[in-house]
Length: 472
Image (cartoon, rainbow, N blue to C red; front, side):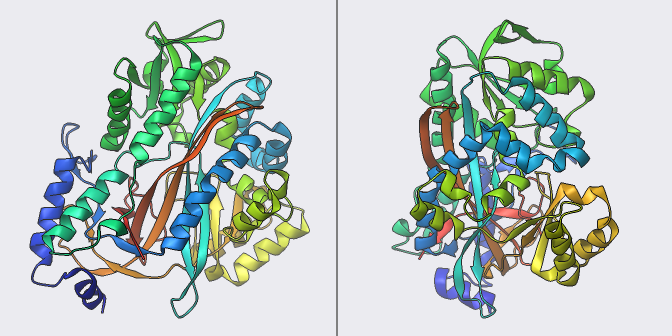
């Protein structure tokens, strides 16, 4: 059935899928859609999983979430600069989660300093459908405020799909594949922060892993920065390297004796990214006048508990007009905290145990592979229902996305047509301080697709493939 649909839509069949798939892989590698892998040398690059053809996506919903992204940027930015809200949202989490507690301590140490922050944000969405597969709306999965990835490669996926459709002899698709300038718009966001800092000789610091597997996505952003601003130097350092070369002179941050204008974190969103000395480095950089992306406040504003807070009645109206609040609220799935000793928390735990297939259990973690579903959700809730540990989780209504026929091309795997689930990410850029917003805009998109049996959609974590929307 899936093959018949792809044949009708794109002219893809059992006879041409092998050759077209190899052509697509070669073109994708030629264009840089690749990454390092732990089983080969650091000089080796392998294909990133990618869908063979673009997946259909409703134009109205695509446009709606694009139009609403600046409002989400604004709300998240305002929360990042409001200690009372962050404390209200995270008070129970910081009691049981050392990682969030450490970030909050850094935030408290610097929150009185009036500083500019840069947000390169990505809001992720799934279409929602009824039992018959009819699309009923679109729901937000989460907001990402830290190391929002694949903005560098997303525009190239569109080029791959244009190449494939042309090879298949398809015509009239040009207006169906929306323009995507994510890499350039994110680069311009970093350049704007560098410009706002006010020293044209200062550098931009990328804080990266010791070994970066998702290297091509990061380099694409770096090279886009250089393309727009050739005099701007980008320096890549890991936390381990920074221990020996970072200094704070007054409020000026120096790395390898070079003044830093912007600190862009691509590492530091998981506990295992830090050793004890690295927390001191993070605090030192946060104390500086360099513009952080994200700041500690913006890091905390992207947490699950803040997402729950925004879904509560009357909250959005504190930030935006009622008509916008109503539109945003339609995007939110039902969400619940599991705070111990609260009737609402006890009720949420009971709901999850009794109906585990209707919910997702989310810890306060990023990077993929952390969410729990079905029996795993039920078993964990039963184990922690009387424990302080449950404060570190939220329960979210499970979204029911429609199944879309496609073919995820993976390294050393034979192409196979199957049903996938598509997750749309909308990038946003916001630059400002507590009082003023200097830049606030949508900044392109990312579509990722995963097999229908996969619980996660992270590409770097190995759960899905890069995709692009075919608007209908």
